Image 1 (tube, rainbow, N blue to C red):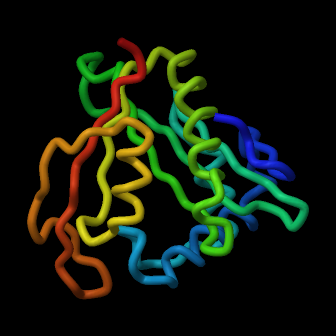
Image 2: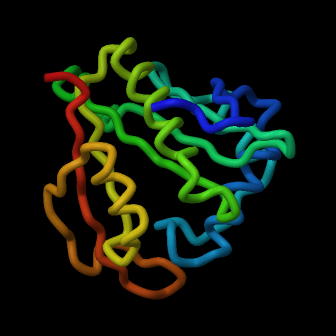
Image 3: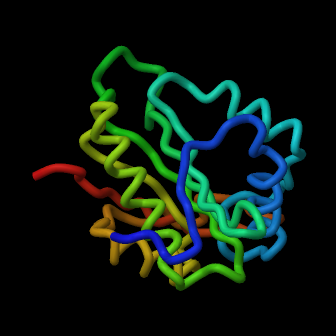
Length: 171
């Protein structure tokens, strides 16, 4: 996947916290694309980026106006010994004005390549069952649906179903 014209993708640093928080909080404020419902401060995002666990990263997509999207990849499980070392989870957040332009797909291509370099073989993640845009995006990236948990998340006081999906990064 090529990166859309005028967009660059790179690994985030703590200095990107304000832009990451702005994108994330915009998605949260929209109220229909995220399982999150509580905004984050710049300081919280700076700490999050600085203290990402080993084998984790956050990629950002930038345009002339600043950060327009980001994607996190972190270990799926850190409370066992090594049984799940090959599995990561991923979160994708794109500013509403930049959706459906290839930014998310370009982020995913960069993240899949980096995840493979880090020894991951699979991405296992979840999304709102009522977010058909996100489901379409993930299916187009090669994810498959594993199952749905009904009333699994409580977002803004409302119970939401959650779809679990996976994508193998090699063969």
